[in-house]
Length: 141
Image (cartoon, rainbow, N blue to C red):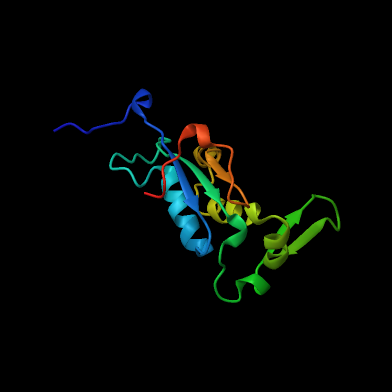
């Protein structure tokens, strides 16, 4: 028996549209991370980028369960003394709802060159409109 390996030229990429309205953030992020990595395909290979493009709309309407909205904090450090900046999840949802979804998905992706390349196939929009109509994205599979 021979092991089937995927050739780089035979990879078919689809565009998938997901509506985040009313979906729980963590469950949405795991679904998106699987699609970006290609784990939903039968010929998944961990060291190849087999994933599809993902468009997420209505990121502002995503649900966050429990008390995470008040308790979770995100930190950013500038590298200078006193340069630690903190934002609560509630403030981030109000100011940049796209960033909340992107951070959740990024945390579930590999922290390697491959993971960064796969994250480039993610598009997140706060409202219901997106500029990728020409790619004819398929509805949620």
